[in-house]
Length: 249
Length: 332
Image 1 (spheres, rainbow over the protein chains, first blue to last red):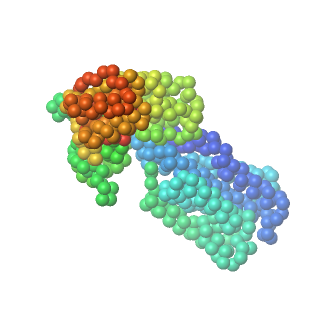
Image 2: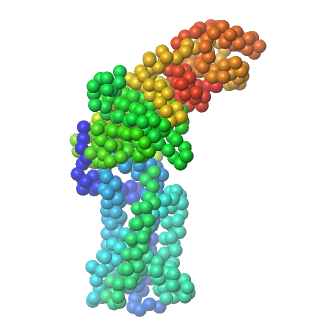
Image 3: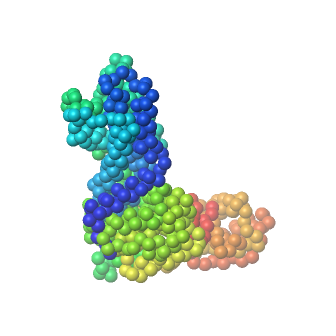
């Protein structure tokens, strides 16, 4: 006979399991670690980024941090959860003593753990490999807020796809959105270099809002209110819709 | 004897369960009770409502009518304290193909305080040799055993087992049946759904048969078979071909619309006729068909119905899935 384990212990066990399974998927490491790092190194060294103020790395580091959050929240979490649903893993977990709040907390803890590794790696590459120095006025706190809001928005979008679509459709759509955000999210190409109508649409996408907010945080110049507000709206909409539409089996 | 008659608090008590999907009524007043230490088998053809019934008991779905209590709690609101006391084995297992048996059991063990040791469970279900093998590389039977181990990891008072021996080889099936019988001997209540009448005959204290969303029969296996009409068993000089079976069934159904041929897996030359009284006219019709088709009958004997024949009689199931993985094969 047993009782439910304390929630923190059960949640930590599932978060550790999620991380272990993520490490077993080569494609996860490619999209969460290799691609953002490769984008940063490639575009910072080949000098094809359209004219931006300061060294390219100062523009690219916030963009690739945003890309990392998109990769982890939307692509990795969305696809993994879609397949969890297809294989009946979510249903089986729902029959265990772990409450749904623990399940969601475990998945988010795993996302945040991956993001910590991504931030350390990308900032490390920028500092050590590309000579980036944080300017006076850079705000790690603001960057943290932007990363958390971005995580909420993109994890919400990932779960929205995973809970409503077949796993294969989630996989295709998450990868398609990843590419779209890479092109239109102000990650390697400044939005003001895009054609007018496209720039207008791109400006309200969560990818552009996240890269903008991070750029303001890491440069110490600009007003972060608008991009943070856009991110908050995306996060609230994605999480609200997910709560209404998510199917567990 | 019913749970109430024994004076025990039931582990499961469902009364008048109704479930509708749109205009379709899937459950239409299902009553079901399982006492501690009792093993009840829920049988029925596909679409009879077995899965819906068990999912309501598991708490995955809510009934539109009726009531259900599981270990004195409402399964849809019992939450973690109830789920810690109930072991589930789902169809398909709900396993991540990239995980390993050891990892999965350790994970689910971490959800319980006071459950079973995962490594000892691996040994108990015979998965030691594949403890670190990815789930996607396990055989169907090994996945089933892992799903069963997951049901046991919380040392539950009640087990809900959906097709527990499906896909297992005979040796694994025998070991799994022994394990389930051991749980019942320890006082655990078990509700299992199965298409395998071998499971039922060897394990079940009581059988509940569902058809079209209603309970059509309930009782011990002996009570159920005693309630059926006797059948005619034939031994032939050579096994019937599939075409021969079809032709004989069609011939018999001209006079006895419910007639069904049931093979005996232990004797390929034997076949029983269910759904028709073993009267002289039946024997005459078979003899006439056999003579016309050059089939020699070695022996013909009227006998009591087997559980499978009784099941077919009660459910009108001609799909052949009643004993899909069992020791007998349904034909016709």
